[in-house]
Image (cartoon, rainbow, N blue to C red):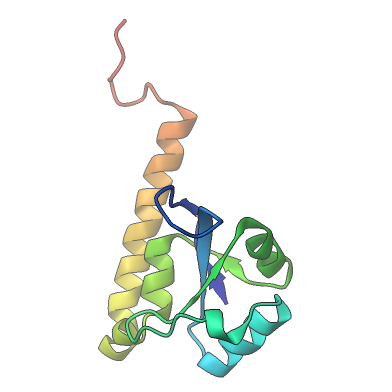
Length: 122
């Protein structure tokens, strides 16, 4: 099971405006069983063919992580869990995950040293 980062959706009509996605690279039955452990109703499942998932508010995301879900970026979640990408082959998904990891490392380095790219005035 995987959860991506929380996103804000300020224009959404729902009573909550912040959530993430729960998806799996396994079976839908396993995803439904995990969602049930979180207390999600089956009717909330979003079964799009391209990326079947459940939405999780922050408290449910935290619970999912405590139950063993792995935190990944949105790009990684799609690469690992999209049935269409899985059908194309794991090599495509691996390339997307590697690219996402490289982007994450660059962002982390920039956060550690925001002046490392010569964008400040001396």
